[in-house]
Image (cartoon, rainbow, N blue to C red; front, side):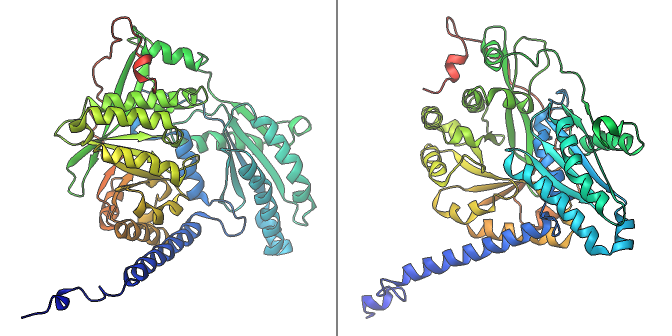
Length: 479
């Protein structure tokens, strides 16, 4: 007869064994995260100036512009701040005459000037594009000309003092309207070419210039609160836009959805890129995202899951979390087919994420975390939070298939996510060729323009009417 003690697992009598194993596991996760962050810095950062490289800047600019399949082909770009380009002209001559150290010193000075905007202006983004070319994104329109002149005044003396006789050129576009980073950079580059050709009078603006983008579209000056009330009123419309999510075999397994609204039937729809910047400052973002959840619960079907992106600002709102929880509990079957995707950016904290994940998961929904560039510190803590999927914005990993360092970053990210037991989803995939290496790296699903159906990817649900005697805004109000 076998004694019962012989059946116990090895180490069962050691009360500290599980503690040691857990400690080793956490140490391994931290080490893997540190490696991921080092790889990210190598891929993204220009070593001389400390600014994001061209890849990092372009990815950030794309995100700022809101480029993505959910915007829809029928939605015009919204004004998106200002984009400035800086060029050190004569850099090669300076390197030949005074040595590369002199040229590197001038480039470092430009990087320092741009970093001051990057560090102290919320939403600003600076980067080194190549050689002596730099870029600065300002989140607010109306400051391009003033900023261009200030940068030129600050940097031109150092350029002229160099023995190579370098020059500093600054130009850009204000009230920027562009669908993606390449279009925005082309607009700013056209302005820089005019400055370089002497189209601007140096006595007036220095060798710098800025121009206004297209005129505002009708209705863009409407108060955000009024816009939301009109969209939720009897004459307005709220609907969902959809984009397919496919598995490695190319089969649609889910749909990514986002709210679209208009104040009157027949008007052009406003997608997330248009209404988020307007409703957010007005304190209406939580209402709009609650409306998205409510509509999504009504659209869940056996054909696949629905993924609802949520902002960090809404996820930290206790009233919003409670309102979503009540609706999930009231519709348990639909809740089981819903994935709530929270963006991992400030003001989200680990405590706030846990406060949202626990009740939503208990109600049957799946919770996903959307990582942007630099969000990697969230990863090792996910094991204790109940998050079951990690989504990654591939715009921050663009060209990784042809770059060994960036590809190593993707594999490290996949390794860490899988070790945590999380599914891995790639967002904003624009190049069909990228789907192959993402699949090889272990991503479970992908979405974006590369996989969107050309005809009906932006289908909408039916018109939503106000209930008798009650405006629709009352239905979305967190309570």
